[in-house]
Length: 220
Image 1: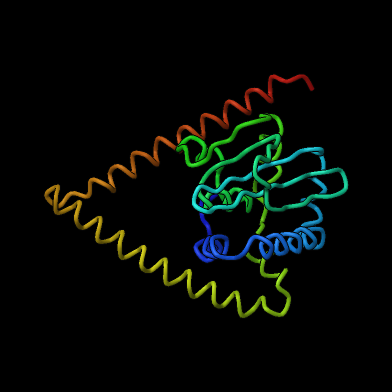
Image 2: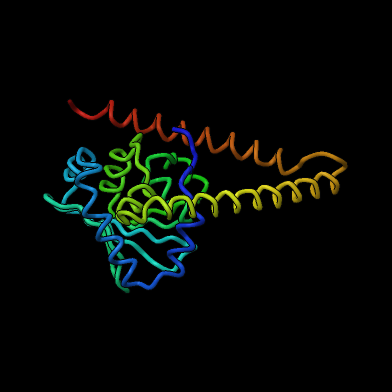
């Protein structure tokens, strides 16, 4: 599964930092109400984990989010202070969104410590397996909850995110040039990234092989 995040994460993060909590709560209730229509098959698979709760703690926004799975309902809402859950996942907003959208390899982000998972291991693994390979776009789901405002907000978010990506690209290019100049023209950072990516890929493959071995050893 390729690691990529087409959703305008920066725009979403900006909204999560600035919108009043009651408005965010209302938006999440509308998103939850639309899940049954947009992802009915996924919700049926998630119901196998019921009852279960999953707490998502983005490190770069002030809010926490609680996913509650019951036999006949799956809801997503803001978590109150002191809320505990069967499984807690911590990481950057982009990492958590990528995981929920089924676009991010959970093994990779776990081994690189971009994601921290605590709590019920069985439910965490079951949740990961259900989401693995799902085609979900949380931004689309959130925009759908806005009704007639969805299209204008989508255009605004897309333009804002594109501008941020261009700025980030320029900053990254300047940083790479500085490193090359400091090391006689050699891109040490690129070497480091290549080595890190190779180690991460090997760790992920080893973890998958171990899981397959455990499944093969289980009685039929």
